[in-house]
Image (tube, rainbow, N blue to C red):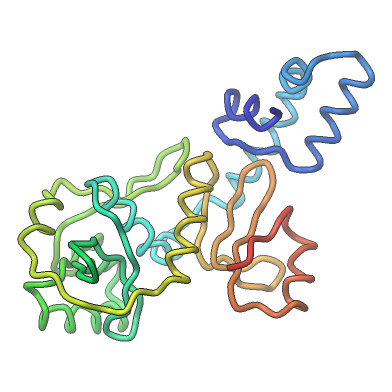
Length: 242
């Protein structure tokens, strides 16, 4: 219930433990209902939310790390089911074109060595792969990462007809990375609820797969030892293991 009221006021569906305690204390003190208590605490909630978003607002490096998920979102907006496939020694988002058949999309967000390598490899399968470029120095379907003040805070946009490109491509077979798909499901879960979601962010000296920021902070981690997870709990409100 608290989360729903917060979502109405601030656009993020969140109620970390500290807020629950504040709301319950106000209810006990004054007899307010939950909605009235949250409204009373609105200035405090707004201050915390602004500070968190300001602190973690993504720069260019964070956006590049999120390129595969931003691209997957773009494919879903065009109505395609998305899987993450292994190709060229990396994991790429791909539009599903039938059972076990995929059209991978290679996102190029910079001109670093890895991106140049992927671009060169993509040319060999140009009839089966879509290359999307968010940098003017690279070839591909022209795209742009738009930054906005409200959720989802940043997203990938292109004027190109992605549907036409996917349908004209020659689907290929590839190995699906199920773990990356699970991480993406958390990306969607938090983005749909108004969180700022970051990829590969380090918090408390530990790199996490995803960091979701609202009134609290929530980490999605994979392949971490119990010791690292225990340490991470000191810095976030909840941890989701993949």
